[in-house]
Image (cartoon, rainbow, N blue to C red; front, side, top):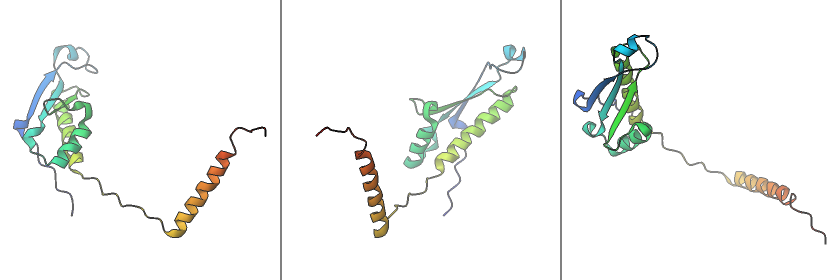
Length: 137
């Protein structure tokens, strides 16, 4: 079954704030607040527990104690480009959290494979024992 599409982000869960940005823009940087800081209230999304846990792990230091994700975009010269960049990154983060990792299949050795593995371990053990101190007897 293909994974379900992540839900769209409701506008009520988002809060945008524009900041003075550093970087390219010349004197424009000093006059216009072009960087955007976007906050997403994760609890407003009503995510399933597994998705919530993955999102919290993926967000890392961008996750606040109040259960918000804070992203800052300041790479572009215009507000709209930074705003679009932040929203795109946030959507990618949510999509990544909705992708459940494939369950790990346990590997199983057959009898011959197990014997070969143990024989190899015995050889390595003998080599390492030979590296010890030489005793005078």
